[in-house]
Length: 323
Figure (cartoon, rainbow, N blue to C red):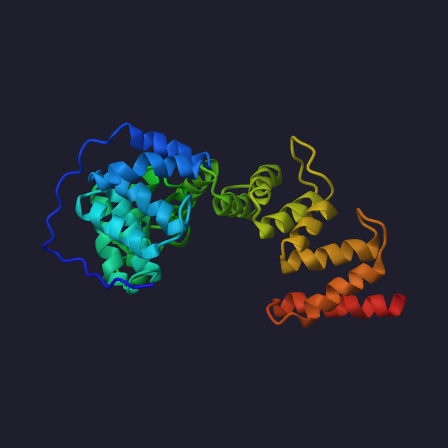
């Protein structure tokens, strides 16, 4: 595949995008419904006629091989045409490709340039990316306060990941004055927007006492949200909260149910705690052989935290003594 090497020039002049053709939203709805061939049929002639919105959508189809053979080079060409015409989603897509080096030369500076163009038009995820880049000094000048400003703008636009990053900034005091209450508020907004990590972090805050007396029931509700979203550490965390007496309005099951789910999802602490449940017959029938297999896997896994591995070795010795 031919690779494109492009540099965003500061002097590039962008022209306003034409009014959106009504068939573009129809094509987008077809894309969301998984009807890729129909979306392609609608959007291709519009893109060829110069519609920037259609060019972006067609580029997305080619980038991901939806309804058409994947062609990253053609996707880049379509994004570049739409992006230089002022289409913000295409500008963001070009930033993403430059950031990861997919189909183009990897360049944080080029990525930041495209993100800036999209951000000027209110693109929330472009603002999020710029916020991260300024915090890290990656492709742009390190400026934590400016990074937080981008997070704030994207968070106010309703971007859940930006809401989480803003909450973390308030929690850590990195680039902004620390404020636990504001951190909790932004975590709550991120969680309500579907961000599992926001729900998980809010649960930890509710347990910690940083917001007043620990509220284990509220913490369990947020941990449950994160666990149901598939975040494995939250499955372990919910099991621990339930084991400690936290209550949920709905039937959340036994702690061992969540330790098992966490173990299946690959969480090391969940694997260990499920082995404990099997050893003790807590929420499960005693099954020392299955427990032994779990702890042996933990001990042999170089990625497991040393503290968990040490606990696994103690449990392995206990299992050996009792059998």
